[in-house]
Length: 226
Image (cartoon, rainbow, N blue to C red; front, side, top):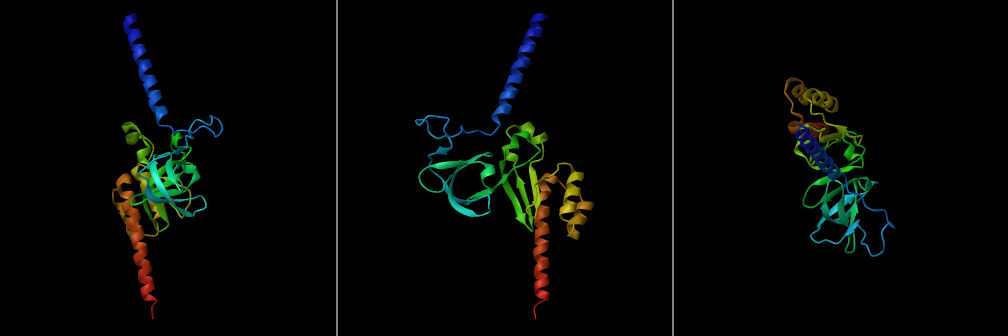
């Protein structure tokens, strides 16, 4: 009996240690502060790499700059704006970057839904138009369980305001989008009478809303012509 209990406790301790290690591995990699390593040690924030692609990044003032975009993760991107070295840049240092031809990655900071994202994370832009922006950061999650039952992975904002989590609950999703898209009667009707699916329908509803705004503006412009 004692032997069985001891084995069980050891197994539980092993599982706990493994779980702790897995969580630790999902945290952003930090870089030693300049001056804390000797001159023979390469600067860990810079790397030499080939295969970078043409792209651009948006600085914190909103200006775009051409750059070679190298490897990137959810927590940093290596960029080369001249010379041979690629400099590691973290989300709090830029607003966005684009790798041509490819996707736009947006820096998300101040997200309160997940403790590991407190320092910022790059998310993939899903939609931008009509003053609305939708970003997905699901690929920052390492475990399948966290992706299935964790906090929402979509965030939306209006007119450059603060990011709001897109709820997974259908009722909460419905309420949020009724607020965001309140001036589109067709979308409002669909939200109230249909069965919206937060993960699948967010981009479609925003696109529908933006298309309606463009059509409306064209009709107004056409009616005012002499």
